[in-house]
Image (cartoon, rainbow, N blue to C red; front, top):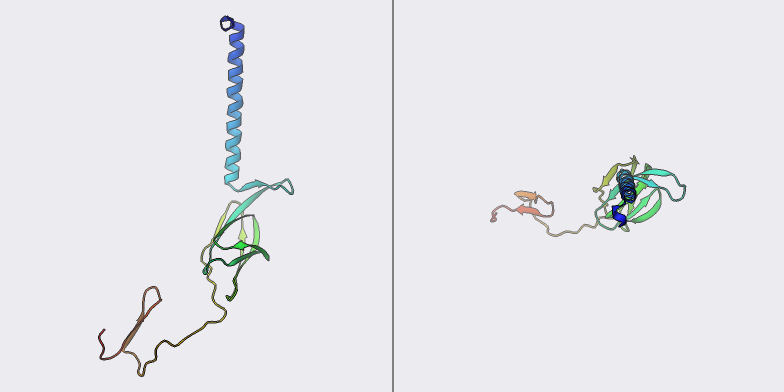
Length: 157
């Protein structure tokens, strides 16, 4: 009949309130930590300091070009890099193509999107598809710039 004893009932209620209070503190602390992680803060395991990171998205054409961040290889494109804030020299390389370079200043909790780099071949190879005796009456290109449309005089358009 311990459940009828008022002292034990008060002690039980006190333990429940202490548990609620500790759970509330744990929830608030977890929310606080998650908010700071979402803003890019991270504990640096080497120095023990808290640093604020930025995010770099790197895509390129053609795909799978090598990424060099401040001269160090860092994988290939189609990648997301989480790096501390600072100044970065980014270079994209691929065999047979000219390299692409850019210097960026990345601040903490910011996002830099490099989705436009286009690497061009080192040597352009041209070939003659068709030769005309006279100048065409009309010539244009398709909207996607992949086709050339030519009309000769006295031909069906």
